[in-house]
Image 1 (tube, rainbow, N blue to C red):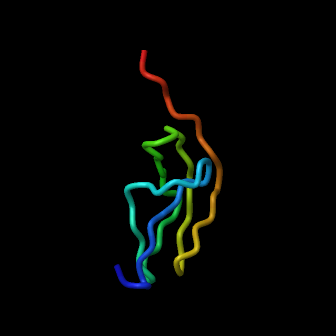
Image 2 (image 1 turned 90 degrees about the vertical axis):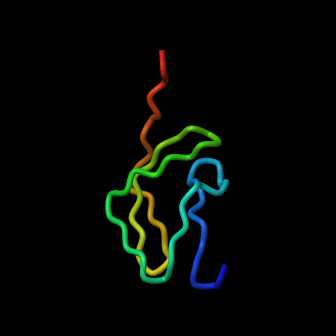
Length: 62
């Protein structure tokens, strides 16, 4: 992994998610899901900076 690539970390628990971003990655209103804590968050990404718009509750399966 070069230093131009980073893992997106979960804003709730801080663990790695399954997504990587590069220096030229841009995301708007992206629904990020963390498989570890099962939280969903809406994020924006630009210039390797992740901004949390809001946290969403993950839907529980019945």
